Image 1 (cartoon, rainbow, N blue to C red):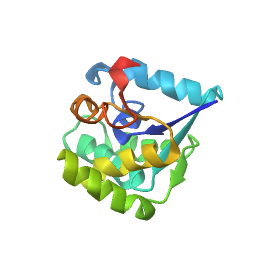
Image 2 (cartoon, rainbow, N blue to C red):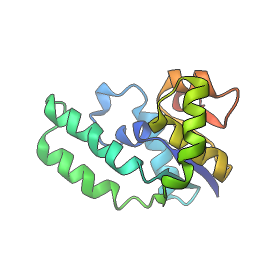
Image 3 (cartoon, rainbow, N blue to C red):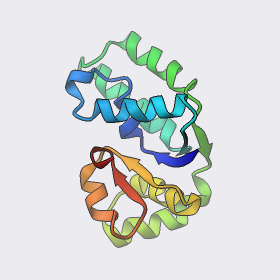
Image 4 (cartoon, helix red, strand yellow):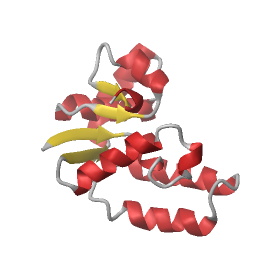
Length: 143
Protein backbone atom coordinates (compact mmCIF):
# COMPACT_ATOMS: atom_id res chain seq x y z
CA UNK A 1 0.00 0.00 0.00
CA UNK A 2 1.32 3.42 -0.89
CA UNK A 3 0.63 6.62 1.02
CA UNK A 4 -0.20 10.01 -0.47
CA UNK A 5 -1.05 13.38 0.99
CA UNK A 6 -4.36 14.47 -0.51
CA UNK A 7 -5.08 18.09 -1.37
CA UNK A 8 -8.65 19.27 -0.86
CA UNK A 9 -8.71 20.22 -4.55
CA UNK A 10 -8.54 16.53 -5.44
CA UNK A 11 -11.22 15.45 -2.97
CA UNK A 12 -13.52 18.17 -4.29
CA UNK A 13 -13.52 16.37 -7.64
CA UNK A 14 -15.24 13.44 -5.93
CA UNK A 15 -18.31 15.54 -5.13
CA UNK A 16 -18.57 18.37 -7.64
CA UNK A 17 -20.36 17.82 -10.97
CA UNK A 18 -18.01 15.68 -13.10
CA UNK A 19 -18.69 17.53 -16.33
CA UNK A 20 -17.33 20.73 -14.78
CA UNK A 21 -14.21 19.27 -13.18
CA UNK A 22 -11.41 18.65 -15.69
CA UNK A 23 -9.70 15.88 -13.70
CA UNK A 24 -12.67 14.15 -12.12
CA UNK A 25 -11.72 10.79 -13.65
CA UNK A 26 -8.18 10.88 -12.19
CA UNK A 27 -9.52 11.96 -8.81
CA UNK A 28 -12.11 9.19 -8.78
CA UNK A 29 -9.36 6.67 -9.53
CA UNK A 30 -7.62 7.72 -6.31
CA UNK A 31 -10.88 7.21 -4.41
CA UNK A 32 -11.23 3.73 -5.96
CA UNK A 33 -7.63 2.93 -5.02
CA UNK A 34 -8.40 3.97 -1.44
CA UNK A 35 -11.47 1.74 -1.35
CA UNK A 36 -9.48 -1.12 -2.82
CA UNK A 37 -6.77 -0.82 -0.18
CA UNK A 38 -4.12 0.22 -2.71
CA UNK A 39 -3.49 3.65 -1.21
CA UNK A 40 -3.59 5.34 2.19
CA UNK A 41 -4.53 9.01 2.11
CA UNK A 42 -3.17 11.54 4.60
CA UNK A 43 -4.54 15.03 5.12
CA UNK A 44 -3.62 17.85 7.46
CA UNK A 45 -6.34 19.00 9.85
CA UNK A 46 -6.61 22.09 7.66
CA UNK A 47 -8.11 19.86 4.95
CA UNK A 48 -11.53 19.70 6.63
CA UNK A 49 -12.40 23.42 6.73
CA UNK A 50 -10.81 23.89 3.31
CA UNK A 51 -12.97 21.12 1.85
CA UNK A 52 -16.02 22.64 3.52
CA UNK A 53 -15.16 26.00 2.01
CA UNK A 54 -14.96 24.49 -1.48
CA UNK A 55 -18.45 23.05 -1.06
CA UNK A 56 -19.74 26.32 0.41
CA UNK A 57 -18.49 28.23 -2.64
CA UNK A 58 -20.01 25.67 -5.01
CA UNK A 59 -23.39 25.86 -3.24
CA UNK A 60 -23.26 29.63 -3.05
CA UNK A 61 -22.85 30.02 -6.81
CA UNK A 62 -25.33 27.24 -7.65
CA UNK A 63 -22.90 24.58 -8.94
CA UNK A 64 -24.40 22.19 -6.38
CA UNK A 65 -27.39 22.38 -4.09
CA UNK A 66 -27.14 22.99 -0.38
CA UNK A 67 -28.44 19.46 0.18
CA UNK A 68 -25.70 17.99 -2.04
CA UNK A 69 -23.07 20.03 -0.21
CA UNK A 70 -24.33 18.81 3.17
CA UNK A 71 -24.44 15.20 1.95
CA UNK A 72 -20.89 15.59 0.61
CA UNK A 73 -19.71 16.83 4.02
CA UNK A 74 -21.16 13.68 5.57
CA UNK A 75 -19.73 11.43 2.87
CA UNK A 76 -16.16 12.77 3.02
CA UNK A 77 -16.07 11.94 6.72
CA UNK A 78 -16.68 8.30 5.91
CA UNK A 79 -13.98 7.95 3.24
CA UNK A 80 -11.23 6.98 5.67
CA UNK A 81 -8.72 9.81 5.43
CA UNK A 82 -5.96 9.83 8.04
CA UNK A 83 -5.74 13.28 9.60
CA UNK A 84 -2.50 14.80 10.88
CA UNK A 85 -2.50 17.84 13.17
CA UNK A 86 -1.60 21.05 11.34
CA UNK A 87 0.09 22.87 14.23
CA UNK A 88 3.35 20.83 14.15
CA UNK A 89 3.60 21.55 10.40
CA UNK A 90 3.22 25.30 10.72
CA UNK A 91 6.86 26.35 11.09
CA UNK A 92 7.98 24.38 8.02
CA UNK A 93 4.89 25.47 6.12
CA UNK A 94 5.66 29.10 6.89
CA UNK A 95 9.24 28.72 5.63
CA UNK A 96 8.02 27.03 2.42
CA UNK A 97 5.42 29.77 1.90
CA UNK A 98 7.96 32.56 2.27
CA UNK A 99 10.60 30.89 0.14
CA UNK A 100 8.35 29.86 -2.74
CA UNK A 101 5.62 32.51 -2.67
CA UNK A 102 2.83 30.08 -1.84
CA UNK A 103 0.13 30.46 0.79
CA UNK A 104 0.69 28.98 4.22
CA UNK A 105 -2.48 26.95 3.58
CA UNK A 106 -0.95 25.23 0.54
CA UNK A 107 2.39 24.90 2.29
CA UNK A 108 0.87 22.94 5.20
CA UNK A 109 0.10 20.17 2.70
CA UNK A 110 3.65 20.32 1.35
CA UNK A 111 5.10 20.22 4.87
CA UNK A 112 3.01 17.10 5.61
CA UNK A 113 4.30 15.49 2.42
CA UNK A 114 7.88 16.20 3.49
CA UNK A 115 7.34 15.00 7.05
CA UNK A 116 5.48 11.83 6.05
CA UNK A 117 7.61 10.97 3.04
CA UNK A 118 4.41 10.63 1.00
CA UNK A 119 3.86 12.68 -2.15
CA UNK A 120 1.27 15.41 -2.17
CA UNK A 121 -1.30 14.95 -4.93
CA UNK A 122 -2.94 18.20 -5.99
CA UNK A 123 -5.26 19.41 -8.73
CA UNK A 124 -3.48 22.80 -8.54
CA UNK A 125 -1.17 22.60 -11.56
CA UNK A 126 0.46 25.94 -10.81
CA UNK A 127 1.42 24.85 -7.30
CA UNK A 128 2.80 21.57 -8.62
CA UNK A 129 4.85 23.39 -11.25
CA UNK A 130 6.38 25.72 -8.68
CA UNK A 131 7.14 23.12 -6.02
CA UNK A 132 7.64 19.72 -7.70
CA UNK A 133 11.35 20.23 -8.34
CA UNK A 134 12.03 20.76 -4.63
CA UNK A 135 9.31 18.77 -2.86
CA UNK A 136 7.29 15.57 -3.33
CA UNK A 137 4.40 17.33 -5.07
CA UNK A 138 2.56 15.68 -7.96
CA UNK A 139 -0.08 17.22 -10.19
CA UNK A 140 -3.22 15.08 -10.48
CA UNK A 141 -3.16 15.41 -14.27
CA UNK A 142 0.25 13.74 -14.50
CA UNK A 143 -0.66 10.58 -12.58
